[in-house]
Length: 477
Image (cartoon, rainbow, N blue to C red; front, side, top):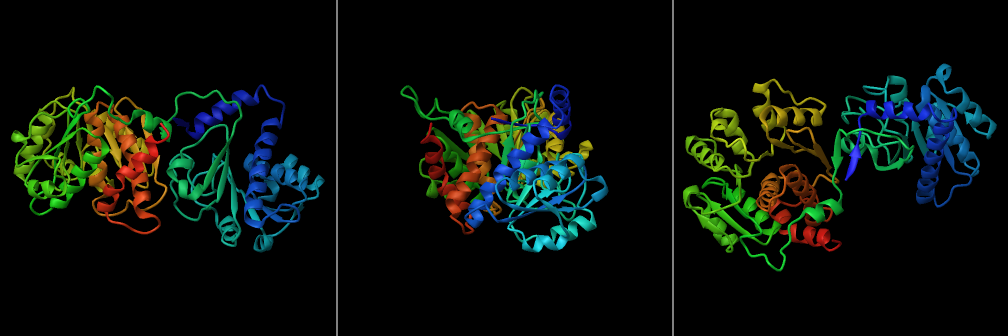
């Protein structure tokens, strides 16, 4: 599990270390790490280091100082280094002096045109908003690979929001701790490398699951297990109009574990044809015993669907509510009265569904998606899985996970139905809703990648790729 901290928390921890460290020592350590990753990227792209041309884009303050000191270290490897000073009167004096002593020079924006690699040291963690026009004009000239110092300039460090011109980096070298930008705007950051500064940090703002944590949590049958002990999940989804939602959600649940999946709804015939191992019935009352429910995908938003959702919520079992189920909760506030307050509830909205259920509570989905998901989770006493390019899972106790998408293959109709089926199966196996949502989102991304293989695919192919993704996950367990 990887912790991620706000910039405020990192700055506070840095101040404590700075008070006990020789002046300039932390900056030189950080800059040495930047120089190391610059040489690696140069070698990767150009096949060597000596004689290559690196241009430093240098802003005011310590971020620019890191870039200047990195340039001084690069000169020791016979790299040609030119600094473009975007705020000459506020350039870091010691860093600039070190670069000049090492044989680096100060140049002009035109030098960017001939660079083999560019180092982005324009702004640091305290900056907000897009690049200023003069900096944006220089960045627009960049055609070479970019190494960003701490974060790509112009991207908000705590939300990952981009509101105008900003840098897109191939590599980001950060210091002390990972910040939200590195996961909420991963496509802007490229590969992120951490330079340890020995910081003593408090509770992270969110965490990121790794393969080891997901593999350890994923249910697999043991010698004493049978189909019932592994968790029985019930799925209420689909309709005569949208039977595909049922087929997708059920299929994901079937493939996520080797227990038992039950289906209740008007798409029972289609579900049986595609998944003969499923116990499919026409109504919730006939479904039989389950340990968790999935309710919502394609089920409709009329009164009959409202009554079905009320029945599910009244059962007092862990429940994943998605799609039409979320719309029903927003349309019929009295549905909350049917819910057993002791039963875990996982909501899986996309942005528009989030707005439907959050705005009556005065919660807006702004740039800070983590804060918004946490606020709704606390307000409703539920776990919220907010889908997007970086999926946020927030529990009512303030914990949060973020799962960054590594591609855009999941942006297809029915993909969310697959995710809800995965999450429901994990709830039935007894996982905490936060972990169930996080692990489901993690595998969902890998199944999308396995299905796509570099080309767009439909959600049905993502379902079919779940076993491939699971084998890859559990093979290293």
